[in-house]
Each structure stands twice: as C-alpha cells, then as structure tokens.
Image (cartoon, rainbow over all chains, first blue to last red; front, top):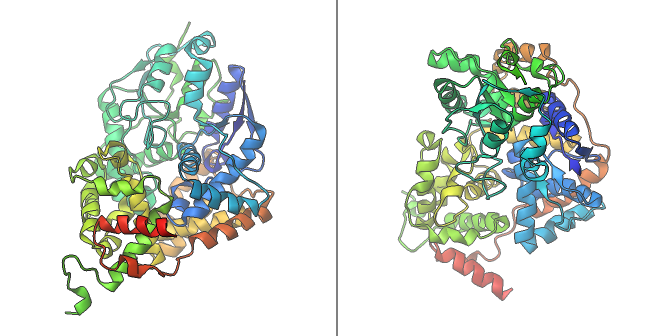
Length: 290
Length: 227
C-alpha cells in the first residue's frame, strides 16, 4: 500500500519523535509513505481566523500537489488533518469557494479538483491495514501497560469522520489488540486548551489539568495522544500545572505510534521516547516478552 | 447619549447595518451558514463548551445577540478570543448551526474593523504566525514564540527559558526554519487570495437597512438571487 505523506511543521522540529515513529510503524506493516514534495504549512487555526480565503488557498496548495500523485494523503498532526479535510469538504460543498480558491491556485500553476482523500494514520491502521495484520506484527505484548486513550478534538470533530465524535473507540481497539489495558477515560475527547496555552494560560492550564487528573485517578501509566499540540500542553506544562494546583502529577505523554512501535519491538531511541521530557520513567518495564 | 446608541426595535444603527453586512459576507465561505436561523436557544453549545466559564458572552448568547441586532457587543467580547476551536458546540448543536465557524467569522470581522486591545494576545499570535508563514511557507515554532512575546510581553520570554533548555537538551528545537522551494509561486497564491479577503465596499447596505435578526439572511439571499 502506498500513501502520500504530509508531516507538517511541528513534526519537523519539536515532535520529530512522532514523525519517526509513524514511519517506523508503517514500514513495519509494509506500507510506503511518500512525503509530499514541497509541502507548505497547512495554516492551522491561526491562519483561518485571520484571513479566510488565504487560509483555504494555502491549505489547498497541498491538496493540489497530492492530487497529482493519485494517492490518499496521510496527515498525522490533528490540526493539519482537520484543516486539510475541512478545506476539501468546504470546497466540495461550496462551488463558489472552489472557484475562488482555484483562481488563487492558478497563480501558482496549480488547481484542485476534489479527488484527494485526507486520512489520519489511526484511520489507515484500523480500516486499511486491519487489526489482524497489526496483531501478526506484534513482538512484545504490552501486558500490564495501562493506557488512557486521549483523542483530543480535531481528529474526531467537527464532522463525523472515521470514528464517533463523542465516544471514539479506534485507539482503544488498537491497543487491546496489542495486549494493553485501556483505563476508563471519559476525558478522551475533551479539549486540552490548544493555543490558549500561550494566550490565556490560566484557562489552558485548567483544561490540561483535568485531562491529566482523570488519567492518573483511573490508574493509567501513560496518556496516549494523536496530536502534537496536545502532547506539548500535557507534557511540557506538567510542572506548571503542579505548581498552580498544588499537585504532583508525573505521567508520560506518548504518541500512539510510539506505544505501537514498542509492541512491534522497536527501541525507545528508535521511537524517540528518549526525547520526551518525562523520559526518566521507564515504560518498557511494563512490557512482557511474549 | 448619542442617537446612534439608542436601540430601536426593528431598526439598526448605520454602524450595525455595516457590521451585519460584513458579518454575513464573512459567513459566505461557511456551508449551510443560514442554519443560524434555526437556533432554538437550547444552550447545548454553552453546556458543551469547555471554556464558557471564562467567557463574558456565552455561545448561546452569541446567536441571540446576532438575532437582536447587536454584533458590535460581540466584537468587543472576550468570547471570540477565548474560543479554543475544539468544535464541541458545533458537533452537538441540534439545529446543525456551525457555531465555531460563526465565532471564527466574528474574529475575522473584529480584526477587519480593528476592534481589539493593542498588543492583544490572540491577534498578535495569529499575526506572528501569518508573518512567518508568508516568508517561509512553513511554520517555525521557536520563532513564533519569539515574535509573539516581542509583540506582547518581552519579559515573558525569560520564563520560557527553562522549558526551552529542557527541549533543547532533548534535541527538540530546530534552530533554523525550513523554507519551501517554490516560495515564489506560493507568494503569488497568497497575493491573489488576499484580494478576495479584502473588506469589500458596502454597496448594498441599503437593502439591509431595516433587516434585523434572521430577516437579514433572507434579504441577503434575495439580494444574491437578483444578481
């Protein structure tokens, strides 16, 4: 299976561990990811809320390039995923918007004709590759590892995508298949505060605290996420949360591909787990050789 | 009290007429935006919103104030800036109103009309983001933070130093931004798109003169079908 691959800006620098682990996991399962040539930033929510048509146009530039390759486009970052998918959907629903955006793309020698499917790696793992194949790739059982599956906002909302918007289960199914235990986690689709961490810090700290609190209280060893921004908020601000709320949470925040990679037998270094700020905590002690 | 300030039921001030028209135009790129008419004021949006406790006008009241013909209050609210765009309201709305997209539209309108405090955090962050994007085609996170804090509170940068060092130790900071190859065509696309995003002259304000609340949407549809 071949896919176009859109890493996005944060996977290039601060979250290269997500990039590495996605590639490792897909390679292990026999999937080829072709990085989209000369991709640009998707614009994220920041651009859409300043200039709308520019936001759609720069996001559509990536879709136009992907269209030439005639492959589904995988975007691991939740924000990239939702913005690219939204651009595709709104252009399909509003012919007037499609005309305007294509008019802009023409200036760059491109056009987009709505044929690209934007996919999240979680969706591809479950629905294209399948749990059978994933199970056959497992080298270590994650027996005993207790996981809080945190989906965040933007892969399940706003439109119904590959999973339920209130009670998604794809990640839960994935990790039960590789032997981990999913703790009861009602905060799985709550917002972590996102960019508010830089603008309204007090609000974002409260939201992030509630997400960590619920995982810790329900006995999770780690929180597993799909989004670089959630990972950053929950991990890098743990100290500040502890200072503000007089708590002492220390819990690793991992990307779902990092945990899956552990089950496939990759080392912590290969998966970039040593780059986590909470790297001192040994996650592998929880895994049992099959 | 200025005459402009008196709110007469069924009549909009000139300023409000102009804001209303600009607002409806901001909604042009939102599919099914006319669903705003179907609001039953149930409050599901406010109940679902994780940050409504920090807002001065709740998401339900946002729709109510639009209906009442008071967009100006919305543009001055904290609400539009504190929205984290988690889409919980939009997902749960029983009337299928795109609440998050409506708040985006208000945010863009406030920026278009220059209604925000100086060095306002959300605006400064978005603006810094746009500046970096326009010159490199990709975002460079460390630079974003530096630009942002230089615009808002340079001293805050120091408090980020410990975290920055921890990140650097784990090789998680890219020191140089990567730039896309075809930056020339990328800039051409942006230049063209910016023309579409320019505030347009309110040539058909007359049509909407007395349109309060939902009737404004009908008038706008009527206007467009005549074109």
